Length: 268
Image 1: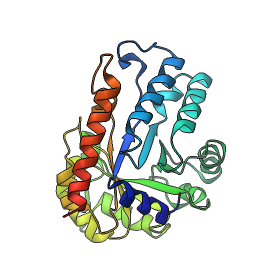
Image 2: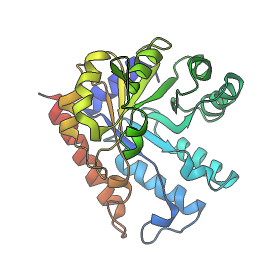
Image 3: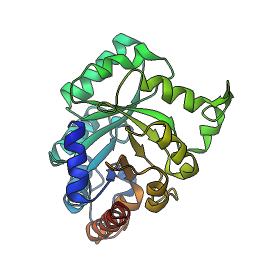
């Protein structure tokens, strides 16, 4: 999916919602079999209940990779259930020496046909350049994350800037707003406004809304642009809105609520 198509979906659905399919077998609700089959069934029901409100889905690959070949099959089946008008994200956080990154890029862009992949930039340009080589595919680079440990490195000062600012400015020279997004955590909304000023044309993937305490309003006030510019991710608040047999209805209600909040902000 290219930039124009993504923007068109955001406008059509009046939504910037990204549903995170971080499916934990141990948390599958009442009536769902705790198995690979059960995970696929659960994911199917979540996707069908939410796709009218979501413009993107993010599959956290670790939740599937832990089960080996069966998990990869489950991930592929889940990916194939996502409607073609929705942007797909492999939340894999890859990044290695060039030839290894080339294999990662082939796996997620050619074999699985995701629209995008999250990457870790610590090893530098040659570790990310293989991902940029694919047309109409996106690199989503870790920028400022929402976890507590982000303070260990990301916010350290160097030459008058924080490390994450150095990283994002450098990576922006390797890609462009049509193939590069940044991960910017919703629990750090106070920093999002400054990042939007620095990167007015780039999309931000914003985790941390819902269960982690971030709000759609705060994120939009800080970083929404005239083209939307945000993919606001919610995972646990949708997936586990209920542990009972009504989980589908509850997931749909939560997704609808987040979409309506997006629509309200976009109408201002």
